[in-house]
Length: 262
Ligand code: NDP
Image (cartoon, rainbow, N blue to C red; front, side):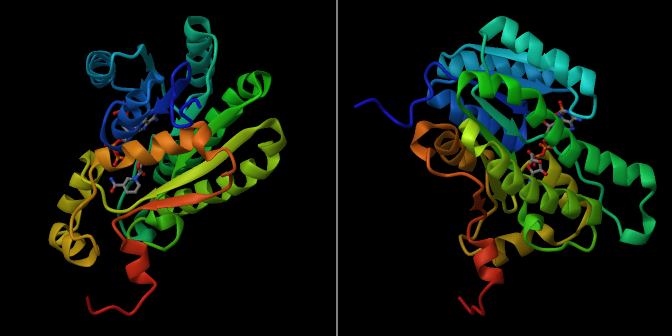
């Protein structure tokens, strides 16, 4: 029997795959043999991540200078991947930004920056890979949400809206493209130790300790915590799973749903 978790022969594109959670995901896909396309804006970070994929996992890898807020950058990036590898089997919509402040203080431009990156950008990437996945007869799309896909967050209204939106988009695209054999699922990270959350700890004093105390597993998540989950959702092993979300949160949301003194 062939290994249903294997990603050998597949090509996976990870937006923001050059650092943080995206890099952890790219490592998980590379671990199972996928060719990796690291798509980000920072060329140096991207080049370093590509080198690491090749040397650690012995897989093919390429970097893309890619801005999810720029339609022409998305289109030309996808064409480059198709020219080089001829297919795209997995799209991970991981690129994301946050601007933290009280809701009354956002400018319209700040709202747009967050929504355009986290939600519209992800949608445009889905649209861009759709013709290829349909023609191939199969595809896997993994969107990255957040605990704010489930709960509100007073100091991050646009971010929370974008992450509820990406979950809603996951549900709708899963329905729209199920008969094309394109699977669309969502990973909801809890608090993960990355450059994004370093800035959260700077902006919100006491957050570091609060998360440790409040997370049932008792620690911050690490990018490597996403390796296995992403590999599963990208692989044939999840072929009856679509329109689903999977929390990778050390039990955070479960804690919110219960009255617990442990
Ligand atoms: P990082 O800041 O470490 O990574 C964000 C990534 O997004 C970077 O690699 C960055 O690449 C990329 N990116 C940002 N804007 C764009 C853009 N316009 N085009 C292409 N790439 C872009 O954050 P995390 O790893 O923490 O976040 C990854 C995802 O996980 C995000 O969607 C975030 O919302 C989500 N998340 C994170 C949580 C956490 O606790 N850390 C919790 C819940 C969700 P570059 O530097 O090249 O621009």
